[in-house]
Image 1 (cartoon, rainbow, N blue to C red):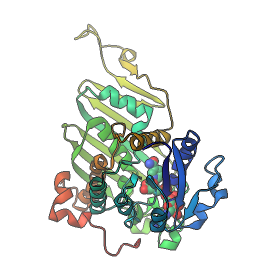
Image 2 (cartoon, rainbow, N blue to C red):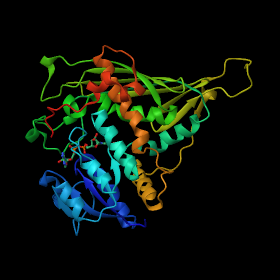
Image 3 (cartoon, helix red, strand yellow):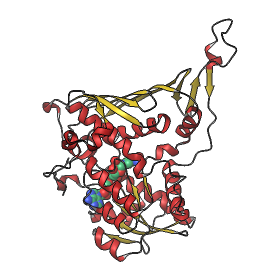
Image 4 (cartoon, protein in one colour):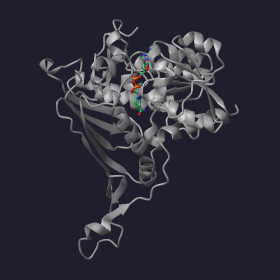
Length: 389
Ligand SMILES: NC(=O)c1ccc[n+]([C@@H]2O[C@H](COP(=O)([O-])OP(=O)(O)OC[C@H]3O[C@@H](n4cnc5c(N)ncnc54)[C@H](O)[C@@H]3O)[C@@H](O)[C@H]2O)c1
């Protein structure tokens, strides 16, 4: 297929607008043609609103619609970006893949494993190109980390992220009309977000996989919010501890918190291989290891152990992942894609498996079993009484 690739975006909210900003630039380079913007809420399709997020945007000739099926039936589309909240999917992605349209799915691809596995099956059956919005794999710091660690034996990764329950970028789904939070911060609500581990922690989980390979088991314990401490639907747990075991033998700790009335965020990362530590210090990636004659005559000075990794020049990762996706469609080769839908199933299984482990009192969840066994079906299924469909 030749450039420009004809695309639509479903969901013109926080993430849809970020994709639109990147695609608007790429349209200027002739790589893409933005054909349609689709959103249930017409307020989110108003040109003046979109211009606040996308410099120089003009609606000229771009179709806007609320009706997904009608739009894909009537317009010539090569690819669709799916940027709607993860619990509200109602067959749109499957319909698009069945129509031979290439798929860019935002993370988490669904809150329900069975639904994500069905999406994966249909994408494979139709042979369409797919990617999942794990743009951090295209961040130059994480890419340099990946390259540096490629020949090392990883033993333990720890990622700790303290976030504030209330602090989040503006969300655009008009949740109060759908039985959701009045303040629209749906990421703080369990039913909408599937927990902080699923909605946000899937990024760290996927990065750990980028550096250490696939995850085989998970154990998790959450400290659930006291019912008297829930304000405006913000019922996600206070704190989460998640342990992952990798195929390679490495283990990892994902520690997250979302405290209310605190407004303080910070984080810490430690990546250990058999003979060194790697840390993120500001914008630097720093590896600590000894590379002199062994054993050294005296304990080496700390400064001699500190190695700042050279970083490739940076391009916005959201733009970079779109470039890779469009290139894959144009060339028919997925070699440049760092996260296909199929390869991302392990990241989703790991975080949904963490929820299951917590509900089972911290019991180890084997991810291979979690995907297929009868006992886990209750954790994989979309509940019949979900508010969304
Ligand atoms: N990759 C990243 O770094 C990143 C960053 C933010 C969000 N996300 C993901 O992107 C997805 C969307 O999140 P967001 O922050 O943009 O949310 P949002 O609420 O800001 O925007 C969602 C948009 O979808 C529209 N919408 C909601 N339900 C719809 C439906 N059924 N059909 C059509 N349109 C619908 C809303 O009107 C809104 O405009 C989520 O899965 C989220 O986790 C990814």
